[in-house]
Image (cartoon, rainbow, N blue to C red):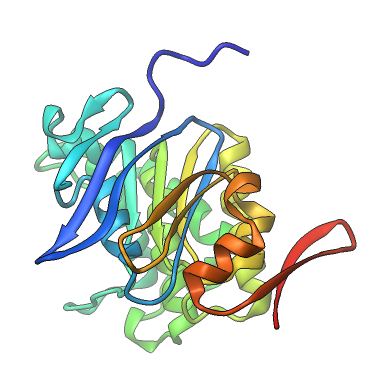
Length: 259
């Protein structure tokens, strides 16, 4: 099948640096609608910095990132927010709010400057809460929730935003096993529906299960970007994480076992 002229997300010869340290040398990658990209690497390798760069929140030291064919500087913040949504690692809660009010924050890019949320916005927010199992908590005070419940509300706000591209920094934080899988299945289904998804994960086995593409940072400035099948090789992962891993096929799934 011939690919469209513009990918949903493109990194063109991108390189990242913090101070005198290079997080990654030049790499290029294309993410089309319907695909899932996972960022992997050891702690401190620069996964969050890379995600922020792919989200247009910080510039690259070299190269260019394009959203739907246009560099981030070529769009207004409102237009960008309608196209892509970002989940940070930490959810700030400076003001008291209900779960529903927090989910409705995702509707702000679709509202006029002085507009209030209408019935359709309310419907979308309630539906988003339902998809993450938080519909019954709509009137609860946000600060009364557990860490995992708060994380699911943050994800619901992204769903209410209805972007074409989701970028999520460690979305499995605080979640137990049931919701870890439920959240990954949710974003896999969103990709199937035509969205693009970028995830920072720590679990290599889950990356092997859900990713179409992988960017692997080794913490020394090295980067490998490509299809999941090409990048998720035991020798390459062992070198990046500093521990020998063995690739095993279990019940039709690929897992990597530490030696």
